[in-house]
Length: 143
Image 1 (spheres, rainbow, N blue to C red):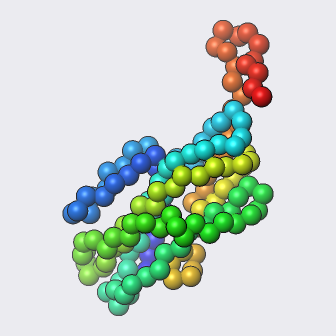
Image 2 (image 1 turned 180 degrees about the vertical axis):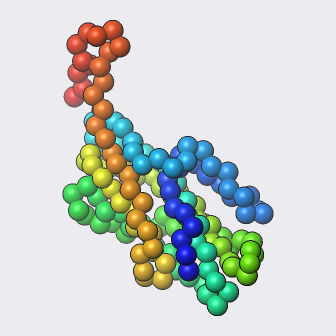
């Protein structure tokens, strides 16, 4: 088994023949003036399996928050597709739709696992924005 890629995007879909349609691909940060921050996005991964690994696999997803807490996101695993055959290798392309509220600024890690083993951790930074007017006047107050 080999992870070909994993990243976050604004939206994605997969055609019946296995092509991915992706908008807003490969970001690692979201900016906001205040928390909590509600965001909707997708995690996309492509995992290559050798022919002898062509069995059912269990995907898992969890997120570690900026303060160290971990949440299991098993309900988020919705669409696992085995598609194509290239050099006798099977590919699992996964699109996980996430709708989350981030309570704190900081780094979050999305841990993707296969059969109980973590294969990658995709980072997302929630950054605080300081809005300042373009004309040089006083900063905008946010409560």
